Length: 168
Image (cartoon, rainbow, N blue to C red; front, side, top):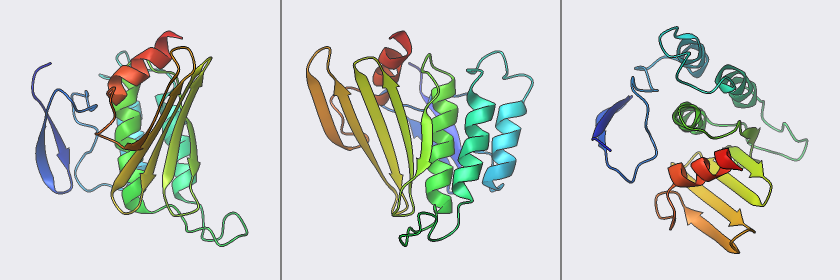
């Protein structure tokens, strides 16, 4: 895989082969709000034929989750934080350019956002926490493999796991 560049609010960053961002053009467009970015990426005519058809609906769901109020669960939940929503948007856009199925998207009580994929014997969850931590849980009952830890340290890359999910 060639070295790919993407933009964040902090500037440009180079991506290695290990990274799971595979989009071009980049999923983060300057400092726009999540709602604008979601609409912009999901409606770019030049990209429509390249991403999965579930992306616009997933971005709409992410926007709904990101706008949840404090105490949304009536038990003191923290509202989803903007940085978690931005990271989730980046993962969704990158994922939409793979064969992965649509994820389930929901808030965590700690102010984060979770993305989940379930296919037959495969379960995959990415938690995007507001403290700039992304956690991953992976379980494949077909090969009896389970792993949990920080994203980027998984024994099998997220892009590979999503490709497996897209094939089942």
